[in-house]
Length: 151
Image 1 (cartoon, rainbow, N blue to C red):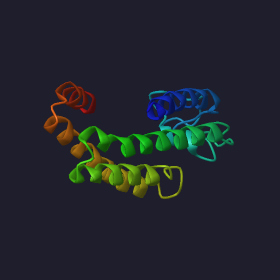
Image 2 (cartoon, rainbow, N blue to C red; image 1 turned 60 degrees about the vertical axis):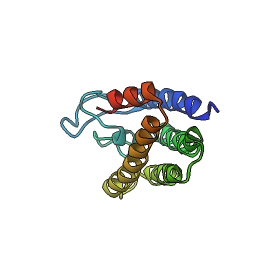
Image 3 (cartoon, helix red, strand yellow; image 1 turned 30 degrees about the vertical axis):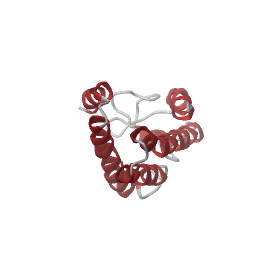
Image 4 (cartoon, rainbow, N blue to C red; image 1 turned 90 degrees about the vertical axis):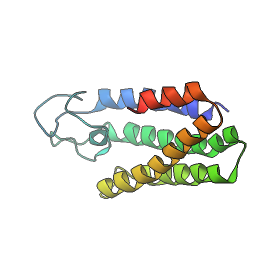
């Protein structure tokens, strides 16, 4: 199914659009104009107020991007265990991956740090088990590509 890939492409497009709509400012320099790829974070795009103190016009698009990304990755985590013949030990990938995305979608709230830690922990479990599954099922190219990409 191509849903995760299409969702990822839509996310990238929405993310780029939101960077163009961001009014400006960063933690380091509130007076900068627009989104600075070196000084701003993804989370800056989802705040109600930009770092320069003006209403954040990028927020609706950034939130749409976040929902698209988390939804697409939830579908990915749901489908992935089928690659490993749905063996019971790999069902944990499905549950921790989907749960991590259900939590991550709330990154824009006041619980940002908790969401990052909890969502990251659950996604980490799914990712480790994914690597184990790839290796055990002889998907060596995917395994090594994932190792390089995650380092």
